Length: 145
Image 1 (cartoon, rainbow, N blue to C red):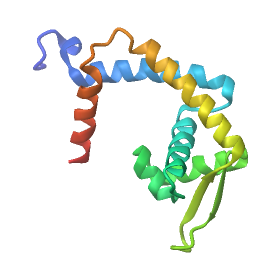
Image 2: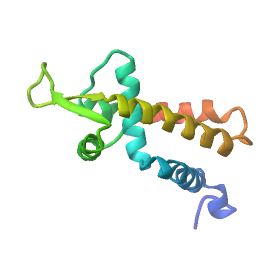
Image 3: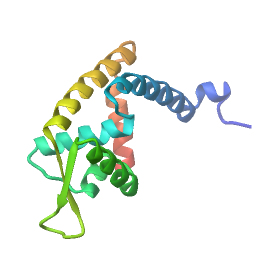
Image 4: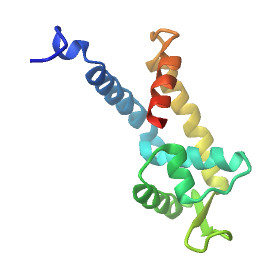
């Protein structure tokens, strides 16, 4: 038994799952020529954004910004460092933490990837109602409660 009379077609969770997976496949396909996975893009772009706001964030701050697991964030940032896209230095405020900065190469790739992903978003969501972004922002706010 389900509370949704039409079954999964009425379930907001199932609908969100399906839409999210389709959107993620489109983003992954668009990022592939740039040599980035979706999560690498998110963490590179988040770090680039935070650097642009005058911050030299720690791995934990980047994970909080992107809402990703701290351990996974650390692993991905290491991969980005291996690619020469970020540098990690000991944080002067906390010797256990690493401060992260995007390199010049990383900055150029982040900006290129952001343009690519913004185009995917524009194409993917072009027929969505104008209320989609405010609805998603409300849902994101629920997660913060």
